[in-house]
Image (cartoon, rainbow, N blue to C red):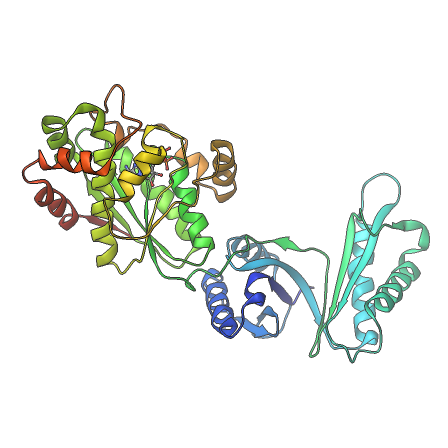
Length: 399
Ligand code: ATP
Ligand code: MG
């Protein structure tokens, strides 16, 4: 019987003058996420977003399944509820509340009495009943239908909650509040470029920055023929998964092997990894400027491996003149894994394929470096910039 989805947001509500911009962006993203459904209307209603069918009818089971799985991926949303919309009138609210709650109580299969509660919210201050009055009214009406012996009232540990929101223009009744990822709607902050490897961390980093409202393009480095096609295919699958959370992101694919050979042939072995990483940043910066991205994003986590010590992160960041965002810098590996599982990238990333960074990898990489020393090393490669520019010019774009 659900004929409405009521969508709640949190952080957007704290915005001042440009709150409308955030709300419009959120509505646009919800429309995009639900684009496979025909005849759906998404509208702003003070402090909430409302999703309905054009014909105001009840959603089908299939429509609800799509809506539930898609809105769980909607940044900016705090939670949402399939709901029944009614007029602002207890005489209309009450029978629907009874219908919904009695149905859920009747379907309870567990032992003993089910713990039940009504949670009312009244933003319409002209409504004659307070939130507490509404709760008492609805509990009594439900008890009259089911019999008082069918449930106990438990305000803190209810197994079944009936929600009721009485707003200025309408009221809604709902039985569940489904959590969404929160954050800000993708598109309300500038586009960024994420360096996406086949590892577990960088997809999580991209996701966290998308959660702050920045759409992501991606760049990945492989080392064909020293790495197999699977190295890139894996990153394509990761980018595909991440794109489920945003309108669109392009994956740029770069072959670093020519540069890696030049490093192997000219530079001190222990610096190889940081030199690769500096080159990756520089190529990513060129691609980012070309694609109007305003920052680079990496999955660095402080101290995780030799290339992620404080001095090495400094040396790598110094290679570019662009903001570098490292959202995982303070996270440990288990936290990253848990998030990757939640996002749906873990199972893709966890398949072992050769990584570009391990090509000609030094047996003991330096844990400390200085930009000046690395610049000296780079000068030993006579055509350093030509090689990088050639790689940047030959990016393959995958969408
Ligand atoms: P991840 O799990 O994200 O691969 P990692 O623990 O393997 O991280 P590093 O290999 O040191 O760590 O990489 C640190 C960051 O550098 C990555 O998070 C990613 O942003 C970037 N990076 C590393 N290798 C690549 C690559 N082949 N292509 C694109 N970006 C890369
Ligand atoms: Mg890696």
